[in-house]
Length: 279
Image (cartoon, rainbow, N blue to C red; front, side, top):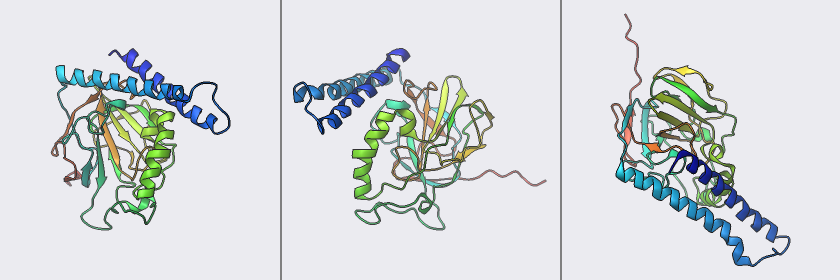
């Protein structure tokens, strides 16, 4: 499927979902001038488009699997992996937004306050500062050019209780999906690494970016801080490589972090901060 077709499919899918949910709102006030079951056609069409694009992406991976791109890790310290492509592909259950080989990581420091675990009922939500990942530096994985940079969206409370997760999936997730890619990834940075490879950092902390579109960055340079913006249940970094700068049309690319590889779900890994020798 060409880039143009993927872009058209993404726009059509979002518009169909908007129409579907708009009908639900209108039905609260008046009867629709057509049969109730016809109101489900936009949702079915959107699901059909999603299925077709997913099949196209899967077929391309099977016939011409991309080679992993080796880059430096985007963080330092002790972290653990979630939703890793080392366990399944696509790692997040979708090829959408170039996420085929995406990974989520969250800080798990050996010392200091531990990362809060998910709970059933209480507390319903926590502030981002309760999580050790919140505010941790995010580093450039290679020498690159910044092509997208946004940090104006708010960092919300965690969604790590049962009530929070239900709200996340049934209310917030729907709204962000209708809002498009930038509402899903939240504050973010996209780097052009060259040779058709782009790196995405999602859920960045509000107001933390030190770079803007057009800037040149060097490997290991701080780009911003880890946050909890966008479609996120707790502060973490969502990292992926893509073959284009537009998340709605790009294909995901596999990665390997030097010295780390691709950590599996639940695997803890440590990245040492490089220091300049004192003469």
